[in-house]
Length: 89
Image 1 (cartoon, helix red, strand yellow):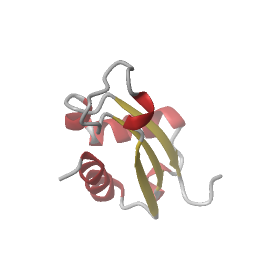
Image 2 (cartoon, helix red, strand yellow):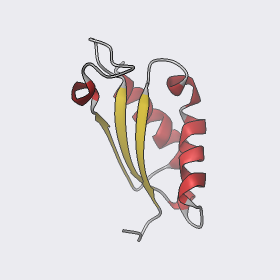
Image 3 (cartoon, rainbow, N blue to C red):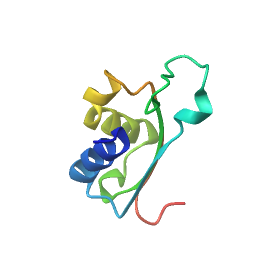
């Protein structure tokens, strides 16, 4: 299974988002730290979930990082997070 699918599945399960997009940006980081020729190292996540209502940006990032702890300690080198509650933005 592709890493983007694993990330999507875990975030879907943890936050039941209204919207979720996981973008593999590994190709943009060729030659940078953490990049592997096979890719799947750098991701950007756009997520809207009621679970983030009333939470600070830092708390939202911590929640996502906790849900993806195994992936972040393994093959994922970088994760850019855009997390919002419904109605924000």
